[in-house]
Image (cartoon, rainbow, N blue to C red; front, side, top):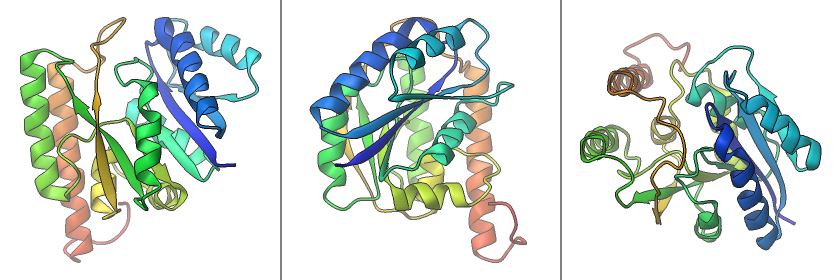
Length: 235
């Protein structure tokens, strides 16, 4: 039986946690996976931890990792990957913009031999301005690293990719950029993304710009180290 860990970073997602758990559980059972759902509580301030305790108390398939202080989505994903021991790992956000029902598409594609398969974002799931800025950012990231232009944080990877990603200590762990820098074999499958069901994005315009700047600097620094232009150390 295929073993899969599903990693779900959590911050301000209390209203959607029970639903994403039930939908992930249903999809994993349909696929006949030996699965575990790894929620990473990124020091949520509004009660998500209580909901996670309730879910974990009802299912032995659920494991909760907790940060004592808020470290951000990207660090939460890395915590989940480091806790994963399965043959495959899935990463999906808790806000239900990415439908768990697309898991069979990712699974079918990864069995073709790819190390990582992204859910390629489709649809009008944000405002026009955010959509345009996102396309610009991802277009530049594609040119720098080769990662798919529509890559997001809903993806599936094999254990070799997970081990490569968790081996180094990354200055800014933005998963798509890391995957591109490591030259892992990647593919994507189109998946319609939905608008946010509850709450608002934690990423303001300023924070999105700050993340983009940190990502591009981290990629540039990585490439310079690979070329021997910077002393090797942290990647």
